[in-house]
Structure formats: C-alpha cells, structure tokens
Length: 144
Image 1 (cartoon, rainbow, N blue to C red):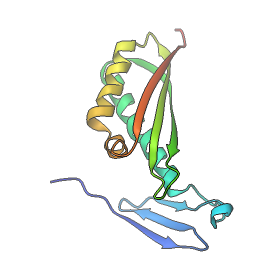
Image 2 (image 1 turned 90 degrees about the horizontal axis):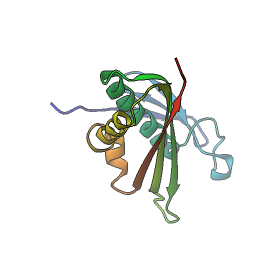
Image 3 (image 1 turned 180 degrees about the vertical axis):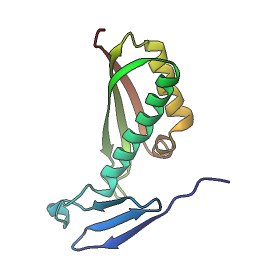
C-alpha cells in the first residue's frame, strides 16, 4: 500500500495557520508583515526547503551509517530561487552537504547523495519537477 499523508490547517489570523500533521506534530505557518502576515512562523514556501533539507539529510546520514563512515557533524544548507510570476515556484535550488568526521570517504558521500537525489528523497523528486536542483558537498576532517 502506498504511503499517505494528512495535514489540517486552522486559520489563526491575519495570515497565520496552525497546521497539524496526521502524526500529531504541529507548526505555525505565516508570512512576513509585508505580505499581510505577522512573521510568526515559516512560510509555506520556506517549509519546502526545510522539508528538502530534512529529507535528503536523513537519507544521507542513514546511508553513511550503513557504510560505516565516521560522521560526527552534518549540515545541509538549502537555497532556493523562485520565479517572478505566480505561482512563484522554485526554479533553482542548491543543496550543500557539509560533513565533519574522521576519514570520511568522498566516494561514500557521493554515493549517499546520489541515492538520496535519485531514489529515496521524495521531496527532492517532487521539487525537481519545477526546479533545477544542484548538489555539492564538503568534507571537514575532525581528526581522531
């Protein structure tokens, strides 16, 4: 059976929505004051980038663990550029993986990112329908 998802948004005014997921997690979504909101939470479009960072990050760290790589810290930095015209979808997204650890193999990182990008990360595979997604990585050696 295919995985399913649910979310319920409740308008809190003027533009804020408290959204609860089917698994019971809640988040406030809003927009900046210049867009009619109060900036009390991330915007829905920001959440797409948040979702991408989490999705690919979870994939990569899981894969690298299975490859027995000594990852001690990991950041996923995501930047998106949007179209000028509505619906202002993301047209370009860059994802930078910054891994810190001891003797992390570049080949393992490249393989983990490739698997996330092409096979496992449903968020990226959704966003790449409208955006060119470019990934890069950097390995920081932390010593013994």
